[in-house]
Image (cartoon, rainbow, N blue to C red; front, side, top):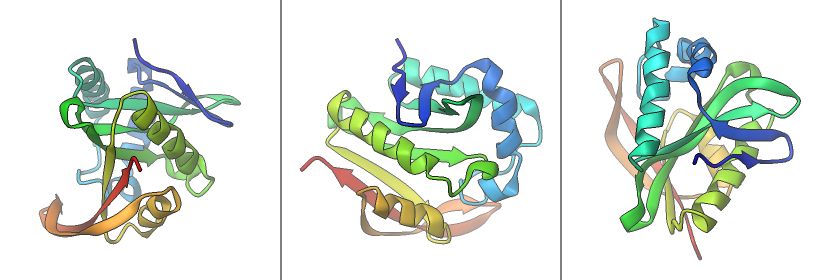
Length: 175
């Protein structure tokens, strides 16, 4: 059963096929994808395939991704979750994205806090990592604000439009 999480302003729930249009709305935006390691979507079917991939990855215990939805208004505004989930090694990488209309309102910070808490307490993780483009200043600052530590830089780690980018690697660990 897929876990539903809540924060003061958000419901973090399973991503369903009906969310594909909202996902397409922001994954087709270059401002969202330029620091994501993938090209912008050009077709709704790409969003539908991503929704299916989220479900398959959860079923196979490789990842878990929640829809970010505001309590006062239904509808997905972004997603957050764990990629590269490795239960045996008690680690995962956190990832997230949000529609630009909702940037800088504290929603991702609120969601990160709840998802990290769930990861440590319910999934038994001892390490949660994050990979962020150096140029993504907002996300780098967000992770530091939310208790992650900068561990270093990985050179030429991600490609975007055939250009190699360096990334920062962050972690949050059980102390």
